[in-house]
Image (cartoon, rainbow, N blue to C red; front, side, top):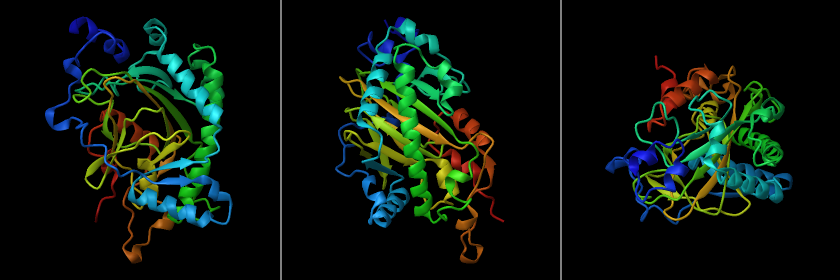
Length: 353
């Protein structure tokens, strides 16, 4: 049974035919989820964006600064993405993964440079242990450059996904304004985070975590940090996301019609370590499937990233913590490392003289 199951490309098709986790998915004993203790009552801050456009704007900016510096994560409500757009996106994602393997596998590729691809785990070419996850990754900025590559089945997939990606991009640009302002970058200056990153790029992943017969032996995704600028995550009603805070993992339970926002490595660099990109991971469920849809907002590949000059003050011992680099250089190292626990960002620290 195991040999025939593991010969399948996609974990969702393995999951439907086994009553135990195949050996290549089993984590070392020292690196397994402890599902009984990692649902602490702590959680990440919830920020109401409705207050952004009123007299309490300064308070919202303060909340963003606190969340980015202390947690690296926050949730947002009243974010402006229509509830119907969110519902349609989640529905079409579920429909995509419920199609027969023969339909889904048309988009399969292990090439991490492909701009539209279905794959499993994280990077099947370089990792030692596989992850209980199937994903469809899409580039979506500008949409017209990539939409013809996207799946045409389900029939509404392209239309629904384009509408969703457009709405989320508008939200992300608002978030970048807030985060730039909160870290101390002049509101309309060229130092603003969104002005220093070239033409930008936007990727989405549709993550599918099938039910797992031994959820305590494997991860949907192990602990990792995001390589991009910021991420905005939509998740369904099944818990799975955990964030590392103060030496322990805390569960981030789903709240309907909210997004979870996290600082990526590039924002940590731009902020000169004021804001932190933190470890997070996905655990799986023994009897429920889970879908999450992160949007990754990135510099363009040729953009040169480094700490913003406004945040460097040699007289106050606030030196540049990182050397400048192109995002292409960073992104290549990230994928090659196959989610190694130590952060990719450490490879780009400025040398101390």
